[in-house]
Length: 452
Image 1: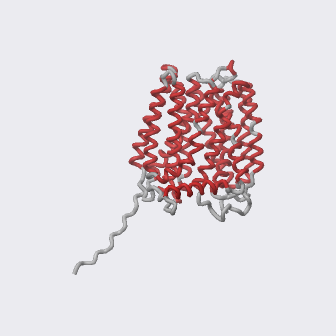
Image 2: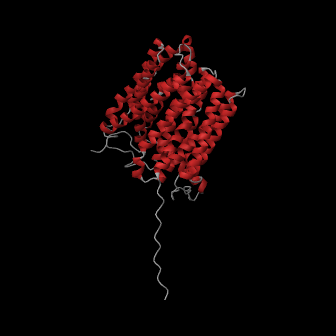
Image 3: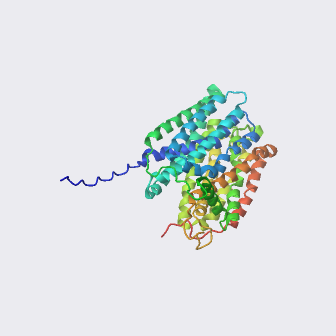
């Protein structure tokens, strides 16, 4: 008689080994955003572009992050997120190489902006895929354990970009000129992203759940079913009972900061007779890109702890004040125009530490909204966690980006009309809409606290 065969044991799924890929994935997620939003400002200033053009054109580069919720479902529907991650990293590397190649051209401004715009779309798509892959590849307990690792390496990428790379460009420019210096920096970044793509093609795990999402099979057809499902997600967001307060807060909370951030670097680089601080490019990398980002990180960590200890409602006003009142340091810098780098770096540390504190409240509020909470004590919007919290969080971040893009577009023109001193005075006045939007919010007093 044939011997009965025992059932073969199911092989255990491969271990995700998060330390192998989580740090590099989130370092790679941050760098293109830093290039588009910060490094490009320094580069164009070094190459003689006016403040009006810098603020207008680099603010337009926010657009992909504004509208990324519109195509985020495609990442679910078309292929595995692992492939999207690797593919977008190759694309970013190629586009950075194209920036390097177009810098010496006569129409470099238009050409580089077009390439950076494409890179911004690739980066925003990479963000969608990377965050989705993180949730698929790791169990919930590991996801929670690695949140701090994600944040740390994201911040390290900001220091590397705004600090080390800006310092490198300034140092190379002293021997080779700014055009060649920035070519070399962009080529270095392009090679780094090709290396990231090759590394992640090997290191990223292959979770069984990382497959294209099933499409709707309703009677009206798959395409129409998808459109209906997609529309339902948006409709659920705009039916939130506090939608007007919500959007007002998202759009106005960073109204002053959106204008200030576009002109901080030009202010530090412009000569004294134009109201600037006459710093070298490498000094900006040290003061703003290194000490400033470190202070921003510490402020963010402290803000998160304060909210977990006392709740968002209790800490909202202290954090709002911490974010907006330090804008006055730029008024003092414009009045004094100190020659010592230490004074400039100290003022930036104060402002960035406050910004880190205040921005934490903004991020926690978006998580609250995406999770289905409408802000009223004892309610959560729909009797529990929102089934669309990922999509609704993406919508919140889209409105956040819109709130940065629109005010920033005219900031350069306004500064050139007012001068740096009066512009920074205006940025202090422009915090008023943020205070009014915060005063209009309704927040559950228990939200954000850790369970005792």
